[in-house]
Length: 197
Image (cartoon, rainbow, N blue to C red; front, side):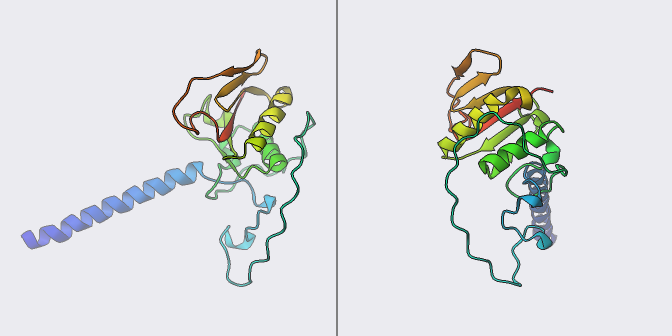
């Protein structure tokens, strides 16, 4: 009987591990997805975003010159398909409310923000909040925040958080926020935009 216990114990541990991985991947896939294929970030459309071995990869194009931050302008024509397709780096468009999706597309296209996230429990709600991840690129974060504030009425924005400060639309400008303990919690690596319903 002790001989049967070891294989059974291993089987239980293996089943638990597989279940934990399945839950992890399912939850990660729910909040991790990038925009649509039409952005053409070098992914092979025929392989579902995976590299292929049928042809060698082309040499990377030279980096474009930095563009100045745009002023308040009308929104560019957004893609008709803002339903989103899951990939490992951003949230699918379908996670946001319909009126938020074109704004997310505008910011991503206009400022080349590679990752935009939302999640259950995001303030004010998952469908009405977007984190534009800029990492250490403070200039891009500054430009995104300025563009969103300048276009807040058109974009239906409630508030913006950036660099441990909050900007309430219709308020008196930027206000300092308490230290939350990390660069991400203090919004030093991303611009948080909350939208009205």
